[in-house]
Length: 164
Image (cartoon, rainbow, N blue to C red; front, side):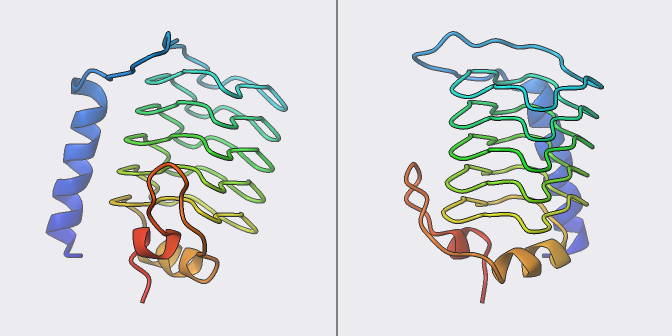
């Protein structure tokens, strides 16, 4: 991917986060701001929080299992040891996020921005990273762990990461 293409894609993704309305069907969406909050161990499972803000929040050990957080901002958030199984982060901004020891199995990260995020000891079995923007080193690291097929999108983790 060329630098120009990466820059254009990043700008378009950021513009989409701030300009496009979210289309959330069959659920009452809550748009909340948790930026800079201490949310260790909090339970957000099965909640619809599309478009919410979690920037710089400490959510170590939090539970986002099957949560709808599409278009949400998690910039510089701490999600160490978090349960993110089946969560939908599509179109979100997750740059500089700490995912160490997090469970991202079956999560949907389609068209997310993950630049400078860390994924030490993370579980990504069945996660879908289709069209996610990330550093080359991140992609290589995640490809060493990639396996499984996402049950919601039907896309294999290896395919979504464009692994060799």
